[in-house]
Length: 337
Ligand SMILES: *Cc1c(COP(=O)(O)O)cnc(C)c1O
Image 1 (cartoon, rainbow, N blue to C red):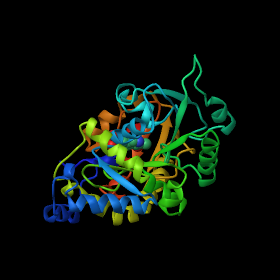
Image 2 (tube, protein in one colour):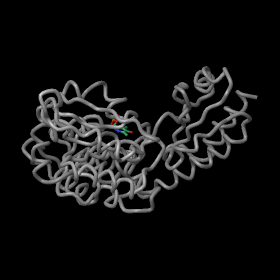
Image 3 (tube, rainbow, N blue to C red):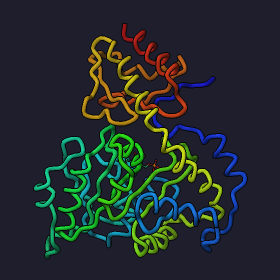
């Protein structure tokens, strides 16, 4: 049975073009820097984001944690949004790998009060550890942070001598929504993490980019984390198509999400979250006790969604088309009527 899968854009399958490129990729031992396809690919991603160098890692979590591990010394403080992936969805890794202290700031859906950010920064004293790094996320859930805000965070961080890491897992979605080049977003960070395996449809992988010296150190730390991999050209071949081709079609997913939203709006009692409607996601709620069983009902009808968790999040991607969306939302409508 083919399911209509609205749980995430991580469920996308690699394209036929990717599978063909993977089968033909030249490979070598990447721990010896001998994989020509990977070498070329890391350079491509760095260049695309306007940075000097890049390093390929297995996942977005690996990449963010490698960034913390490379920017910081053990015991340093990292400022991060309280809703950020780094603190919410990375299995407590920052305490285990980098051994840093996360200081979480609350925000207005990803937007900090800059004075509050500045006042959070600490110097090392007998009782406080130094703040070393500021982490931002764009897109932030379903919201895209504007460039002038990114600039403010970057300048505030630099005024305090801090490094900035951008979790740009969906930076191409953000750039699509902002109608700008990804470089325009990436320039407000020292390091950027870019996922290939979400809407861009590569099977595996994330690239961390930054300055040459930062990436040299990250490559060493990646090996510590067990991320030194061998014939990775196979994955780089898919990644190249993700970056060069798949990044150009994301507006389709965004438009499909707005289409889905327009269908959901016809269901009585549904409340669309207006704060996070910039990319390929629809967040919504409904004041109806039956919502707790919607996932079970839809699953039996061939639609996969994540269970209700304070809200619903439905995600569009290349493996669902408008017909699938109409069909899925019709089932939601039937369920609540
Ligand atoms: C998906 C995602 C990640 C990384 O997730 P992995 O599943 O580890 O690849 C990191 N940050 C954000 C904002 C994400 O959406």
